[in-house]
Amino acid sequence: MADTLTIRPVLTQRDRKAFVDLPFRLYADDPNWVPPLKGEALGLITPEKNGWYSHAKAQLFLAEERGRVVGRISAHIDTLALTMPAEQGFGPGIGQWGLMDAERQDVFQALLAAAEGWLREQGMTRAMGPVSQSIWEEPGLLVDGYDHAPTIMMGHAKPEYRGWIEGAGYTTIKQLFTYELDITQEFPPIVKRIIQSGEKNPRIRVREVNKARFEEEAAIILDILNDAWADNWGFVPLTPPEIKDVGVKLKPIVFNDLIRIAELDGKPVAFMITLPDLNEAIKPLNGSLLPFGWAKLLLWLRRPQVRTMRVPLMGVRKDLQSSRMASQLAFMMIEYIRRASVTKYGASRGEIGWILDDNQGMRSIAETIQSRVNKTYNVYARDL
Image 1 (cartoon, rainbow, N blue to C red):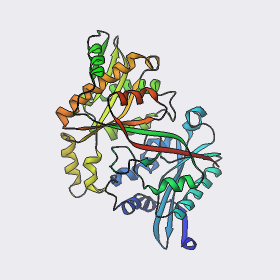
Image 2 (cartoon, rainbow, N blue to C red; image 1 turned 45 degrees about the vertical axis):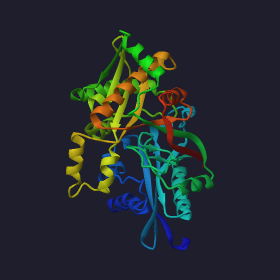
Image 3 (cartoon, one colour; image 1 turned 90 degrees about the vertical axis):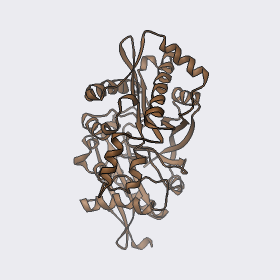
Image 4 (cartoon, rainbow, N blue to C red; image 1 turned 120 degrees about the vertical axis):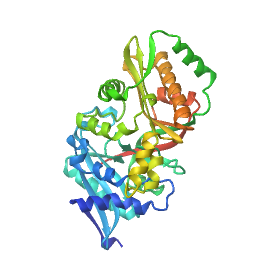
C-alpha cells in the first residue's frame, strides 16, 4: 500500500477537522481512551484560538491512502523553548513533534519523516517528542499503564507506538510518572505527626483559594510556580495569552477547597492545585456536547461527584526546597484536600503527577503517603 500513501500538510479547517476526527476511529475499540471534546481539540490546533501560538509555530500533517485518513502528526517549534538552558531539556535547535496517531508502522515512518523534514527546513538540529503541543499540555508517550483511562490533561496511546518510535532511532531522555493512591485511607502515623506539628506552628497558614478573586489568586500561584519550577527539566514560562487560555479552560473546575496556598510568616510560599477528573464526565459524550451533552456537563460542573481527583501542579518556593518545611507544607496541603475530596466530592482515588523521574523530593512525598506509580510516559529525542 506504500505506493498509494500520501503525506500532505494540513491547510484548511476541513483538514483540521479530519486531524481531530482520526483518533475517534483508531481508538473506537479501546475502553480506556477518553474522547476529547472536538471543539476544544480543534481550538488547540487553531492558532487564532490557542495562546501558545503567540510564541510557537506548527505544521500539521495528514497521511492519506485512497482518500482515507490513516495517520496524523504535528511538527512544531516553541521559540521560548529555544531560549531555555540545554540542561533543562530544550535550548537552541530543539524542535518537537506530537499529536501522532497512525494505523500502521509504515504510515508512522512516513509521517515522522515529514515532521522531521519540516523541522530541518526551519533550522532545527534535534527533534523531541511526543510533545502535544505545549509542554504544559500532554508531554510524553504512555509506555506503562494502558489498562486504565487517563485523568484530565494526561495522554493515552497505543502500545505499539513505543516500538515504532524507538525503532526510528529515538532514545528516552526523560520519564514522567503519575502516582495513584486510595484517598479514603488515612496517611501513615509519621505523616500525621508532621501535619499536626505544622498545625501547631504559628508561622504556618494553609488556606483555601477564593474563586471570587480568581485573577489575584492565579497571580499568586503563578508567581510561586515560576520560582519553584524555574530550574526544572522542560520548564517554559507561561505567557499572558496562555494564562488567559488556562483560566478559561480550568475556571469551571476550580473549587476553593481543592486548591490550597501555604503561607509562611504571611508570605505565600507553596501551592497545590487539585482538579476533579473531568474525563469521567466527558468520556460518555464521545466528543460532542450535542444534543444534550452540554446540559449533562453543566449539571456535573455545578456539583461534581467523582471517583478520582488529580493533582497536576504543586510548587514550593526555591529557597525552601529540600527543607523539612517544604515536605511539611506539602503534607498539610495534601491532607486538607484529601479530606475535602472524600467528604464533599465523593472521591476515593487520587492521582499525583506528572512527576519527573529525577524529582526525588516529590517522588519521596508521593511514596511516603503510600501512593504508587500507575502510569509512565517517555519523552524521546534524536539528532536530525
